[in-house]
Length: 392
Image 1 (tube, rainbow, N blue to C red):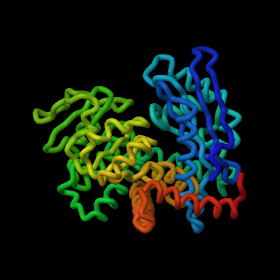
Image 2 (image 1 turned 60 degrees about the vertical axis):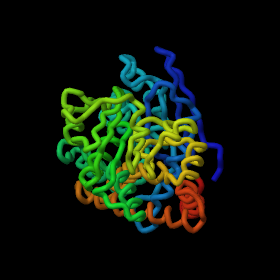
Image 3 (image 1 turned 30 degrees about the vertical axis):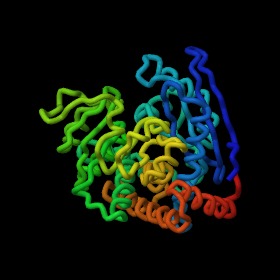
Image 4 (image 1 turned 90 degrees about the horizontal axis):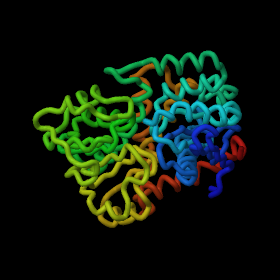
């Protein structure tokens, strides 16, 4: 796999001076897929790494018998605090500037700091038909496909939109598959989650409903801890749009600890579901969990992962773990799954079980980490995709 991306675009907002980036790592059938994030400090290097990750996620979901053909990988990023009063205007101007790319070959959607509703509203204001319109020419029946996706996005399950839940369903299933393989009963497993937005919140819900005990949840205000288990549904109901929990709902047994307390929680499963680069060579020493499940993109730095592996800690990589949302979008749009919550969850669970199993089998056979095994699977699949559909 080439190390250089196909295309890198830098952008400076003429109003605020804020910087934005677009990196297209690879095209398949002329189209690439990858979300748009907004966070203070977002860099071109970060976006390039995320775009490469999207290429991998797409390739890992390649199924020759499916209607959905994986796309290439891309990513957008804006260096701006999403809570800033300037943020929405910056987003609209970024999308307006990137309109030629979005219209022709970059399909995008929510990522860290942005919700799909916000992206959709800003895209309409920027003059776009849709944030995924570049894929429309590849569809057999565009009108039916768009209606199916709209119907799917309109679905809610116990107060949360299906589009927010599918990613967390995938993360949870990856964790459960690894626990099953290790012979760890769900009832005895404790979980700490960093980030309580779309991905972290949904993951906590699915793990709690599977019987695991969520004992720590971190948001921008700090870490909420209860060794007996937190009331995940109450916390979900008390979130704001950025995943911050209203402390008024905390129960007597719940306590507040510093923002980094999630890392050292006495748990079996650690779920970093917020920012990139959260676990580094220095703070990895504090990790007590035996399993880290990367719900966020690039949360564990390479040197930290080596040190964790030497301590017997397994890291399930982001390219597999959090790939469910992206895959569900395309399964729905291309018609592999209908606008139905149970059908969506079933498809995500089956796909994640298969992928995690393949990855862990490969890691065992090769004597490598799960990430190295996932990369090996990608290296095998990309030439097959290129042979069938061309390099661009």
